[in-house]
Image 1 (cartoon, rainbow, N blue to C red):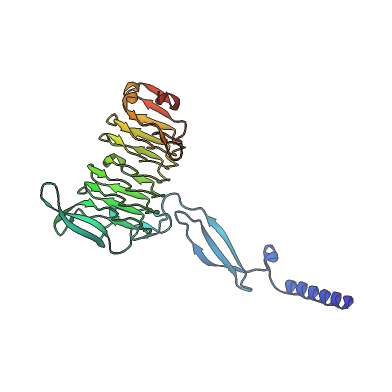
Image 2: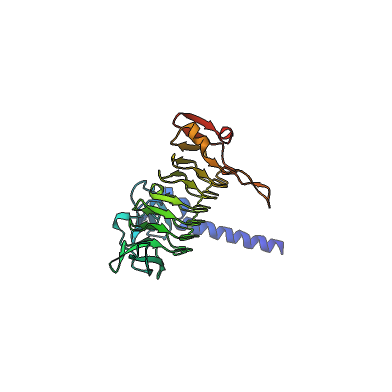
Length: 319
């Protein structure tokens, strides 16, 4: 029985060898047994390398070669102004979003206004118009765009002066927010857990309330406007990649947990003197239920405060 099995195995191996000798195979490529023809050429994009697919006209064997590196600039594939590869945004070509919901209201002077309250269809970008039915659009309502998972880019017009509580909360894929005006105020929790938010016009924001940017893990640099007076409770909490922030001399208070867990924070650029920095009310303390540090700079990196007349280390700043 053992000899019979060995005999069958020997015959099988001989047949395999004959098949390899009779036809072209991958191992024979260098001996020119294959006759390759370019079947498909794929151009490089902004994120993917290009290549050519070759097919042997005799046996159908396929190989890929002639690779071209991904393009550092260009190569975008745009669909409705958003690149499907890297989410780059053609901001100047974006049209006003039609699929929005509004509520009519009056402002503090009794003028008719519209407040945008949500969407009627999902989109990768929202460009809020400055008017609706000829009436100014001046507010974004509480929770108006919360949990829109397709949303990647937002354009806020100059007419908008206030953004409501949790307006963009849990928009996990939001990348950029462009603010065309310069008088915007924000309520609490506006961009809570917008993990991928990288770019926002901080210089256009005049008021930022508590928890506004909690969990915005991708923000690296912040330059606050010269009108900001208070950095609220946990405003930048859990912004793990935050490396630097520029703080104007208008700031009088930095509340507890403002930079909680910003463990990569290295540089605070303060537009005033060392003496003025020390006059800012910077909250300290602990959470009584957990005994965790609740100071304004709890669990931050070993930052340096750069004032116009010198530097202060983290250990010196709370003296």
